[in-house]
Length: 450
Image 1 (cartoon, rainbow, N blue to C red):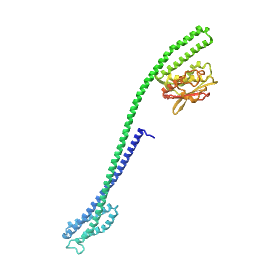
Image 2 (cartoon, rainbow, N blue to C red):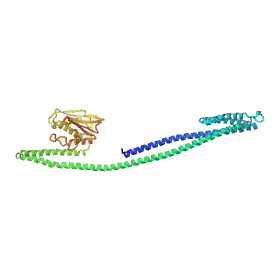
Image 3 (cartoon, rainbow, N blue to C red):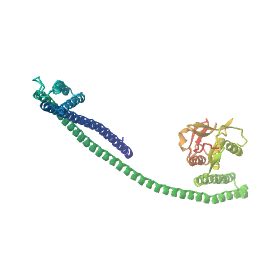
Image 4 (cartoon, one colour):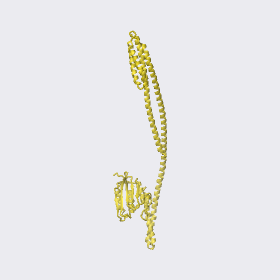
């Protein structure tokens, strides 16, 4: 199935939006990873800083302890104790920071007793003039400190390696994200540009088509006006010769009828009859051509009252026949009174005409609701027609019965269809031979506001 330009543009826009959403999700994910990586880098820097501070405090503890042994200064003693306390605090902080690193935890397990031993020895130092224990001297602290420094150096090197790896991962993720974002943005821009181009081309094509249709519509309107004017003129001009023809035939019949044979009198009668028939046809054509020129003036109309009035006016067509008229529920509607009257006149006249040989005769006018719309109908129990020819029913001059059996010009239902169409509705029929006919129609303004 070939897709239209609008469908292709819509697909392109959807793909572009989906791609933009995918890029946004990917960027959000990468930003989260980058933030986590930055946190880990900050964590590594903090671990390195704590290890460095701890090493410095241990060095200070060793140095000030030696000074205290040499000088016996109370200041050096307190400084050594302060350095030991800070070293212990940094050790506890280091334990908390590397709780997620088993290798660091293993090394700290070896560092802990060394630090405790060094701090205990440093705090036990006495001035050289007073101590009696030979093992308590400044030189005993150096091997312990060096062992601690080796462990801390190994931890420091490993943490630096870990930080470099994390920084490299962060940079790689950033490069990947930038490449993905650039390629995704480029593809999105391409899809949006392509969709925009297709839409612009479609708009231009539609504008050109609308312009062509408008020009053709104007030509069609002009042609219809000319045709209507021509039909009106021709129909009007035909009246004079028809009147003359009928008049002269009547004069001949009155003045020379006794001298003519029966065939001649019959021919004069046929001339008058066909002239009258032609006059009726011209009247119908004029009425049909005037429909488009007649302005549509809507007002609130009561179809029930209108139907009864029209039926009473058809007394001559009924010719004394007993016809049962059933008027059902007919909701008021917004319509042009004179045009709607013409609709019911034609439908009721046909119902009276095509029930001529039916006894009893029944004509029903009612309505029903179909999907919220009022559908009016006129039903009779007349001769009906074959639904095979229903498409011809509303065409001008189309007749489904012989003129010898039922009079008419074949214009009435075409007039009805045009009036209904002007009201924004539609008309259709249902019938069967010898089983009557039903004509349905709708009007766009059937809802009553009163």
